[in-house]
Amino acid sequence: MYIQLLILPFLLFLSIGLFGRFLGIRGTFILVISILTILLIISISLLKEVVIENNSIRIELLKIVKNDIMDINWTLYLDEIASIMLIVVISITLIVLIYTYDYMISDPHSIRFNLYIILFIFTMIILITTSSLPILFIGWEGVGLSSFLLISFWFTRFDTTLGSLLALFMNRIGDIFYLIGIFISLILYGSLDIITIVSHPLFNSDLLIIFFLGAAMAKSAQLSLHLWLPYSMEGPTPISALIHAATMVTAGLLLLLRLSIIINYSDFILIIITIVGSLTAFIGGTLALVSLDLKELIAYSTMSQLGYMVTIIGLKYYNLSFFHLLFHAYFKALLFLTAGSIIHTILDIQDLRIMGGLINWIKISYIVLLIGLTSLTGFPFTTGFYSKEMIINQSFISYGLWSEFIYLITLLSALLTILYSLNFIIRIFIKTTRLSIFTLKNLHYFSLHLTISLTILTIITIFIGYLFREWNLLLNFNNKEINLFISNYGLIIKLLPLIFFILSFIILMKWKLKVPLRFLPLENQYGFKSLYTFISGLFLNLSYRILFKIFDSGYIDLLISIMGLNIYKLSEKLTDFIDSPSSGSSIWSDKNLNGNKSNIQYLSILLFSFFLIFNLF
Image (cartoon, rainbow, N blue to C red; front, top):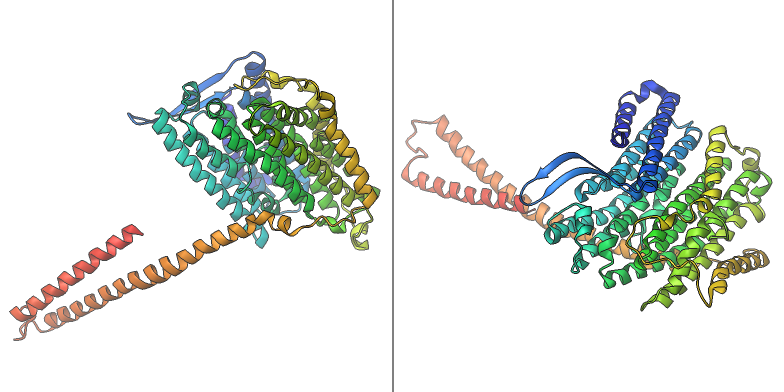
């Protein structure tokens, strides 16, 4: 039965690709929703068998390569991580597609959009359900390709094409790291199966983890490889929700969680992971604080929350990282879809500076966005509280060289989350509006499918944290024991985020956002934008001035010209010989024969040089 998790999405992709134009928008919608509902039911039954009954399922689907060097099998491996992630991915995709039906109803290419989403989910399911590193790489690449297609869906826009190319190129860096990691794992372990690798951990796996960490940093938008994340907002809002909630950005974290056992054996790698994650959380928060674009602000918020997840992996609390990933998926999807509904309502305006006062027109959006933001900030008894608050607490009691630094960074990141969340909601709903009269008279209010999808996500966001608050203790990770209570400073530490929330609200309302929140280093993303511009310009100049101008237009063109000239001269002499075969001055005389031999030898040398250079370049 569980093989249907792969077969049904694949058949659905083929059906929409071949017959989507005949089914129409409504027929495609009904077919997609029906298949995804079946997949969700299968995933729930899988969760019952794997998590509640404590079983794991391993089904060998296909032997791809089997020799003395390597053994590559496509194996369906369903454990706790896979079963829970399948429910999250499929349920959020189902909600996003319900939302998409009305959001993209006026787009003539909405069927193609649904096709790309199904491809996205199919490759994500491959990534989740396999234990083979090469097969996981197929899903890894498929998710990257699908994201490129979805971000560039409106390909006639320049910014959309730029954003999709940036996402593609950034993820190519991660792909290179991943491929090198595959070769190193084959050398160290003689196997490409994750289960085999983690069953026989080695103490000298630092190099392997560094390369897989580089791959995860590119996929999960960690610091220095994060530039693609805000640019991916140029695509349609539903795919922004899907990328940032449950699919692409979680792929890198899933890879690290799968390899958590061998990560445990390297203190050096754990320190690197912790520093990278904490700095990502902090810098993502500062960039969100100064962002003036509605969707870009939420994108930087995603970057900050991903930093929390990576930080707690470095502290060996893998359960907390996984559950913050799950809870974050739902309330971040809620934030993005609500933001999309606001943009749709005010005629595609995304600039926060000209919004304001919308609480008088769209009170439902205000309530829904408030629920999502309180979960994001970790307000007590909201969904984000049950994972984020524990991350901050465990970073406080972790003993190590960097524990005080990590705790300070995570606490400051929590403060920044509160600040940009309040800034976000005040700019949109509370301060005086700057929208034109035409916009206010032509507001597009919610349709049925938008309302259904937002209602479902709101209910899930309110209750999922409380209902599953203790499930993080059930997962079989090789992590440190979670201390549920903190001695001595417990109450003060637990109340700090709430105190920050109240103080931030008072400060922002007192100053009424008159304090400028824009600084040059933040606008330039701490110099990363300039750095990547310099690097890309350097390589472009190198490829143009040396490879093209000198080798291609210079040496290679010269060789071809000389060869052509010699061939032309030889053809002229051959023509003369054919035209006058009985002439006394035959080219086959001793004098001419020696000259032609030298020409033929010269031509042979040129041909050999040409083919040698061609093979080299």
